[in-house]
Amino acid sequence: MTVEMPGFSWIIPFIISAVFLHGLIKKVRVFEVFVEGAREGFLIAIKLIPYLVGIYVAVGIFRESGAVDLMVKVLHPIVDFFEVPADALFLSIARSLSGPAALGMMLEIFDAHGPDSFMGRLASTLVGSTDTTFYIIAVYFGSVGVRKTRYAIPVGLFADFTSLVASVYIVKKMFG
Image (cartoon, rainbow, N blue to C red; front, side, top):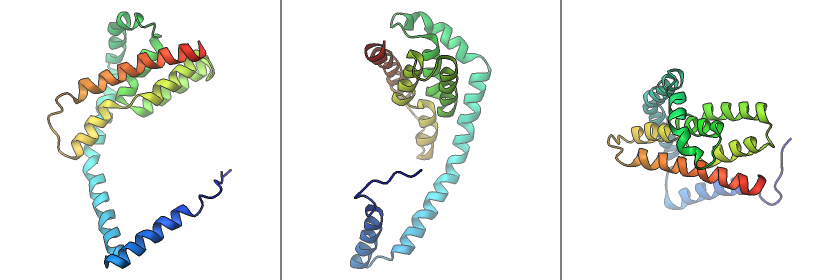
């Protein structure tokens, strides 16, 4: 089923035409520039492969070693103060590491509690308000050659924790 947005079906052909018209006016070889951009994009994608493999292997080792479970046990007393459920803490940690793993965990929460339950809504809010901090550091910083991340990881993890606490607060206020 396709959803038609009346009045907006012309925008893509308009943008493409505008690019070609701009190229004609400025005497730019549009197709050659397009092919060069595609070539550069392909080379960047190839350059990213080692970082992607590295982060996925590291995340797999981290999860399978039990380190995530240990982290949940260590952080549980701290998040109890904010009345954060253990499932939400576990989901938040997984989300910092891997988007697909977090989506899988969210689906498990949906199966166990239902999507319209407090936990289902909390999981949805949490996944929508956090990001894959370590994936971003590995892929984006790695692709441009940044070696010293300095404050990026602590700030990213603080933002993830803030999102966790805010998600619990918002869902409790709206649906609790």
